[in-house]
Length: 377
Picture 1 (cartoon, rainbow, N blue to C red):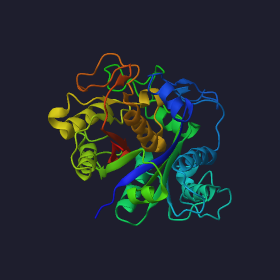
Picture 2 (cartoon, helix red, strand yellow):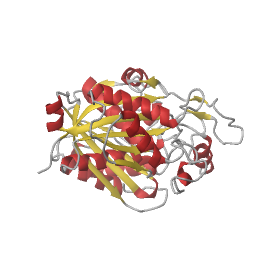
Picture 3 (tube, rainbow, N blue to C red):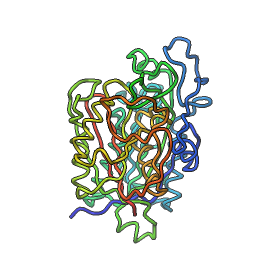
C-alpha cells in the first residue's frame, strides 16, 4: 500500500535573497531579478546579464544553508535517519569531475556532485542513503521523484531533497554559443517576441516524510506531495518533442498517482525559448483537456532566471507558497502572446486564487521530463 508523502520543511535562496519572504517580494510581485553580471568578466560572451548577485559563493555552502533551514523548519533532529538526495552538477568542473576517482588530485566536495550529497548529509548530521542526480534541468526534481518513491514504498521515512545552481562562466558560454540566451536582458515566456532564457542563482531544499513519520514526530505538514511522474521522449538532444509528448506523459503519471484531481495552477517549465514554449503548451493542453482554457499557468523563470539543476526544487517551493498564500505568481515581462501559446499565463501581475492542488513541471536536454503534484495540507 502506498503511503502519503508530506512536506514538513523547506529552505530557499534565489537572486532575491534567502527565505520565503524574498521569494514573495520578488517572484510573486513579478519583479525580474536580471542585472549585469559582476562576478566574472563577461567580455568573451554573447550575454552579460543574469539573475546573479555578488561574488560566486561555494555551492556547498549555499546548499548547506537551505538544507539547514529546511531541517530547522521540520524540526529534524541531528542523528535522524534520513535519505539525502541532491540535484546538481557541482561547481565548475562537476560535469567531468563526477566521473573522476574520488582520490584524484583536485577533487573536492565543491566539484564532485556525489561528494556534495555526502557533505550535505554530514552537515545535517543525518544517517541514510546519499544520492546525487546530474540529469540537467530536472536533476533536483528527479531527486524529489525518487524520494517520494522511497517514502511511498516504505523504504525510507524521511528524505531531504536539495538542488543548487549558481551562475558561472561555463554554462553562460554554452547557452550563449547555442543562441539560447535572451538578447535584450529580459525573459518573456510564451510571448511572440521572446528571445530566450537567462540564467539565475538558485538553491532550495525540502524535507519530505511519510505522514505517519510526521505525526509521530509532531511535525506539521505544509502540504502533501500526492503525485509524481517522470518520462523521457528522447526526441532530440536539446529540443522537446513538438507536441510535448514527454511532458504530457510525466504529467499524466503524476496526476494518475494523485487520483486525477482538478488542478488549480501549473508552474510551467517556461524557458522562453522558441521550441520549448509551444511544445509545452501543446503538452499541457493534452493533459488538461477541456480545463486547459481555465487553469492558470505561469513561468517563474521570468523573474528568477533558469536555475538549471536547481529548477525543480526551487519551483516546488514556489508552488508550495502559491498554495499556502492563495496567490498566483505572474509571468513577468509579458507582452504580445504567441498564437501558438494560448493558455492563461497570469501576465505581469500576481492574482489571488483559491489553490487546492497545483502541479509543477520541468524538462531537460535529452527529452527528460518531470511533474510533481502538491495538495494543500
